[in-house]
Amino acid sequence: MTPAPIAVALDAPDLETAARWAALVTPHVSTVKVGLELYLRYGPDVIASVRGASGVQVFLDLKLHDIPNTVAGAARAVGRLRPAILTVHAAGGPAMIQAAVEAAPHTMIAAVTVLTSLSEDDLGRIGLAGPADDAVRRLAVLSVEAGATALVCSPNEVRAVRAEIGTGITLITPGVRPTGAATQDQMRVATPEQALADGADLLVIGRPITDSPDPGAAAAAIAASLRRSV
Ligand SMILES: O=C(O)c1cc(=O)[nH]c(=O)n1[C@@H]1O[C@H](COP(=O)(O)O)[C@@H](O)[C@H]1O
Image (cartoon, rainbow, N blue to C red):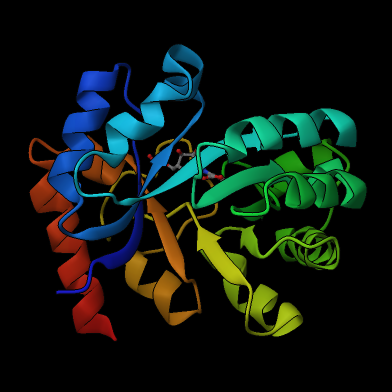
């Protein structure tokens, strides 16, 4: 069976746990995601540990955000690890995004538009007042023009972003919660089925899978539900 278009966020406190989660979920999902917690603790070795024997696609989520020269250096450094996907913050601007794209030519650069943990009230307070859709679409267009081939947004904006940028750009959506699951610190959320129906290409799902006593079964259940919904 083809693995589901899900990136499981391996936000674990230690490498053994992350590698165990990765091994349990990889029969069911296309991708595993390494974020700041693991990378800052263990460094580059973490990539090989979670990739394991399965050779699953690894998404390195470092959300780089600095001046173009610094981001180019960072993207070059981690590009050598050949992650399939690397995140940068779209708010770093077009020159920064372009620098990342050029520095890591074998990796898909995904620009994070507006964090899914931000509410519209939060957006007003950081100077992005208005519907989240507006800021997300603006950042999406800027990022694609700068060379990003993937975008990260909440499932609530995926339809508007797709309409704005057309096909050919990979849309990645965190903020995904199966019906009834706790939203925790996520503010702009939808179900996996809704995110896929609205045009997401890859769903980032962490705690609804990794907090389960059986992460493999939790991933398999969401994957099966996605298959039934298409
Ligand atoms: O870039 C990301 O992956 C990301 C962007 C965003 O806007 N929101 C967001 O939650 N994420 C990541 O997606 C994952 C979501 O995890 P859960 O909330 O546990 O499903 C975390 O690893 C976040 O770092």
